[in-house]
Length: 150
Image (tube, rainbow, N blue to C red; front, side, top):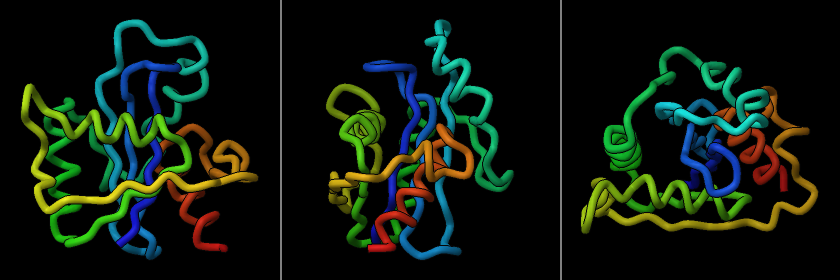
Protein backbone atom coordinates (compact mmCIF):
# COMPACT_ATOMS: atom_id res chain seq x y z
CA UNK A 1 0.00 0.00 0.00
CA UNK A 2 1.04 3.60 -0.52
CA UNK A 3 1.36 5.92 2.45
CA UNK A 4 1.65 9.66 2.08
CA UNK A 5 4.22 11.24 4.37
CA UNK A 6 4.52 14.68 5.84
CA UNK A 7 6.70 15.93 8.66
CA UNK A 8 7.10 19.14 10.57
CA UNK A 9 10.51 20.13 11.85
CA UNK A 10 12.21 23.02 13.59
CA UNK A 11 13.34 25.02 10.57
CA UNK A 12 15.86 24.05 7.92
CA UNK A 13 17.99 21.21 9.26
CA UNK A 14 16.10 21.34 12.57
CA UNK A 15 14.84 18.51 14.71
CA UNK A 16 11.74 16.51 13.85
CA UNK A 17 8.58 17.76 15.57
CA UNK A 18 5.85 15.57 14.06
CA UNK A 19 5.32 12.89 11.44
CA UNK A 20 2.21 11.59 9.70
CA UNK A 21 1.47 8.74 7.33
CA UNK A 22 -1.86 8.67 5.50
CA UNK A 23 -2.80 5.49 3.60
CA UNK A 24 -3.99 5.73 0.02
CA UNK A 25 -7.49 4.48 0.89
CA UNK A 26 -9.61 6.97 2.78
CA UNK A 27 -11.01 5.45 5.94
CA UNK A 28 -7.96 3.28 6.64
CA UNK A 29 -6.08 3.99 9.86
CA UNK A 30 -3.85 7.05 9.76
CA UNK A 31 -0.61 7.53 11.67
CA UNK A 32 0.41 10.66 13.58
CA UNK A 33 2.91 11.29 16.31
CA UNK A 34 4.50 14.41 17.71
CA UNK A 35 7.84 14.44 19.46
CA UNK A 36 9.02 16.56 22.38
CA UNK A 37 9.72 20.11 21.28
CA UNK A 38 13.31 21.34 21.32
CA UNK A 39 14.29 23.95 23.89
CA UNK A 40 14.84 26.61 21.22
CA UNK A 41 12.08 26.84 18.62
CA UNK A 42 12.48 28.82 15.42
CA UNK A 43 10.12 31.84 15.46
CA UNK A 44 8.35 30.81 12.24
CA UNK A 45 7.78 27.30 13.61
CA UNK A 46 6.57 28.71 16.94
CA UNK A 47 3.95 30.76 15.09
CA UNK A 48 2.89 28.46 12.22
CA UNK A 49 3.48 24.87 13.41
CA UNK A 50 3.40 24.54 17.20
CA UNK A 51 -0.15 25.91 17.69
CA UNK A 52 -1.53 23.23 15.33
CA UNK A 53 0.33 20.12 16.54
CA UNK A 54 -2.70 18.76 18.45
CA UNK A 55 -5.26 19.45 15.68
CA UNK A 56 -5.68 15.73 14.94
CA UNK A 57 -8.24 13.09 15.94
CA UNK A 58 -7.78 12.19 19.64
CA UNK A 59 -7.47 8.47 18.86
CA UNK A 60 -4.19 8.99 16.99
CA UNK A 61 -2.86 12.05 18.86
CA UNK A 62 0.29 10.64 20.45
CA UNK A 63 3.35 12.41 21.80
CA UNK A 64 6.28 10.00 22.02
CA UNK A 65 10.05 10.14 22.37
CA UNK A 66 12.10 9.32 19.26
CA UNK A 67 12.64 5.62 19.99
CA UNK A 68 9.00 5.01 20.90
CA UNK A 69 7.91 6.97 17.81
CA UNK A 70 10.18 4.83 15.61
CA UNK A 71 8.78 1.65 17.14
CA UNK A 72 5.26 2.99 16.60
CA UNK A 73 6.01 3.59 12.89
CA UNK A 74 7.30 0.01 12.59
CA UNK A 75 4.22 -1.39 14.33
CA UNK A 76 1.93 0.69 12.12
CA UNK A 77 3.54 -0.59 8.91
CA UNK A 78 4.27 -4.18 9.93
CA UNK A 79 1.08 -5.67 8.51
CA UNK A 80 1.95 -4.40 5.04
CA UNK A 81 4.33 -6.61 3.04
CA UNK A 82 5.27 -3.84 0.60
CA UNK A 83 4.75 -0.35 2.05
CA UNK A 84 5.60 2.57 -0.22
CA UNK A 85 6.24 5.90 1.51
CA UNK A 86 5.47 8.85 -0.77
CA UNK A 87 6.57 12.42 -0.12
CA UNK A 88 6.75 15.64 -2.06
CA UNK A 89 9.78 17.06 -0.25
CA UNK A 90 13.17 15.38 0.28
CA UNK A 91 13.53 16.63 3.85
CA UNK A 92 10.36 14.72 4.80
CA UNK A 93 11.98 11.49 3.62
CA UNK A 94 15.25 12.39 5.36
CA UNK A 95 13.50 12.99 8.69
CA UNK A 96 11.45 9.81 8.30
CA UNK A 97 14.55 7.71 7.62
CA UNK A 98 16.49 9.36 10.45
CA UNK A 99 13.62 8.58 12.83
CA UNK A 100 13.95 4.87 12.02
CA UNK A 101 17.58 4.89 13.18
CA UNK A 102 17.30 4.19 16.92
CA UNK A 103 20.98 3.95 17.83
CA UNK A 104 24.41 3.05 16.50
CA UNK A 105 23.85 0.16 14.08
CA UNK A 106 20.19 -0.18 15.15
CA UNK A 107 16.89 0.69 13.54
CA UNK A 108 13.23 0.30 14.30
CA UNK A 109 11.73 -3.04 13.30
CA UNK A 110 11.11 -2.38 9.64
CA UNK A 111 12.96 -5.53 8.62
CA UNK A 112 10.09 -6.28 6.23
CA UNK A 113 11.50 -3.44 4.11
CA UNK A 114 9.84 -0.43 2.61
CA UNK A 115 10.20 1.74 -0.45
CA UNK A 116 10.54 5.51 -0.59
CA UNK A 117 9.24 7.66 -3.43
CA UNK A 118 9.83 11.36 -3.96
CA UNK A 119 7.17 12.60 -6.34
CA UNK A 120 7.13 15.59 -8.63
CA UNK A 121 4.38 17.65 -7.04
CA UNK A 122 4.72 20.71 -9.21
CA UNK A 123 1.71 22.90 -8.63
CA UNK A 124 0.94 21.37 -5.23
CA UNK A 125 1.09 23.44 -2.07
CA UNK A 126 0.31 21.81 1.25
CA UNK A 127 -0.23 25.27 2.76
CA UNK A 128 -2.84 26.09 0.12
CA UNK A 129 -4.57 22.68 0.10
CA UNK A 130 -4.43 21.48 3.70
CA UNK A 131 -7.38 21.95 6.07
CA UNK A 132 -4.85 22.77 8.80
CA UNK A 133 -1.68 24.05 7.11
CA UNK A 134 1.61 23.03 8.71
CA UNK A 135 0.05 20.13 10.57
CA UNK A 136 1.71 16.94 9.31
CA UNK A 137 -1.49 14.87 9.30
CA UNK A 138 -3.57 17.39 7.39
CA UNK A 139 -0.72 18.13 4.98
CA UNK A 140 -0.27 14.39 4.31
CA UNK A 141 -4.00 14.10 3.62
CA UNK A 142 -3.76 16.98 1.16
CA UNK A 143 -0.81 15.30 -0.54
CA UNK A 144 -2.78 12.05 -0.85
CA UNK A 145 -5.74 13.88 -2.35
CA UNK A 146 -3.47 15.67 -4.84
CA UNK A 147 -1.71 12.45 -5.84
CA UNK A 148 -4.85 10.33 -6.11
CA UNK A 149 -6.63 12.97 -8.24
CA UNK A 150 -4.21 12.33 -11.12
